[in-house]
Image 1 (cartoon, rainbow, N blue to C red):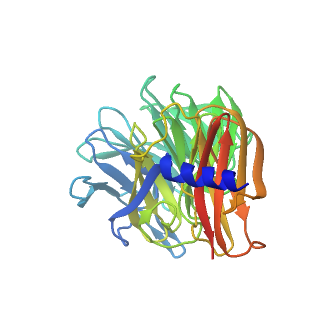
Image 2 (cartoon, helix red, strand yellow; image 1 turned 30 degrees about the horizontal axis):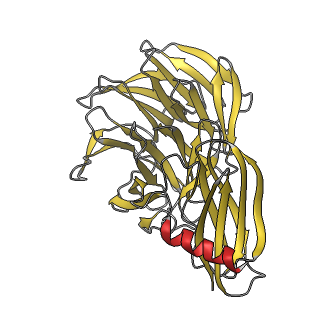
Length: 389
């Protein structure tokens, strides 16, 4: 047992952890009024919807442009009513869905030219709201989602709708994004389920279990905002869900993703490579940037198949979340050891799929002191120290 404890210590010193850094920073301060849908434009700027509030009933009217070099903001287009989801065409044309217009008692879809000139291309029938938009640049197709009526339709520039899917699992759809195979996915606001749209049917990709604001895709995965639990989620194309950033408590704290706090994160946009995300905080009306760094300088060998991500919180007063990412599926064991190399408990054991995972570690019954968390996957063993206060 002592030899095993020594081996653990050597592993900790000789094989620094392979972990992706997650950094959160505020780029547009609180009070900006950007609280809803976000989109990156072909001009390299970020665009955000000023939705407004239903309590009190005050409609936002503008879509704001954020210069990502200076972070200066300016009104790109105005005169909307509760602007919500945004979607760009490659030529710079922006589609804006206006959730609810008191004058028409329904939603509207707008087309905005690169110079900011806006034109209504469809007014919905009485009391039908629209929430999300996504543009398929491969096929030149605009998709629109209705939050209250639970449908997805395509819309052409003449204003003609074509039904895609209705009900059948939709529960307040808003966020929509395409994966690496250009397949449309939709996220439910109300129940946190993410579906792939297969023709007129829905195939469940993942169930986050929390209300989701919007959905984005970049690199090899989706990103979603947990608007009620104040977290940012990453979801692989295989459906593996992990917490990317946020403690779960509302706040406005920048820094490492494990300690950063969001306040009702809602809109989200991702770069094509998925290494930079932008999030609108509905609770503070601020815009946050999340930068995903590569592995740390002391990487383990590139062919390693398992990688522990930073355990948080650490130190902990009671429990922690153990996160890891697998480059290939297989049997995994997450275990907790004391400093003498004695196995205190097995935290998780079993088959796990490709992608990111997280497991909860309860330490309430353990004595204060230093421990070691290990991840075994195939022939790979990785470890991190963990302190119980």
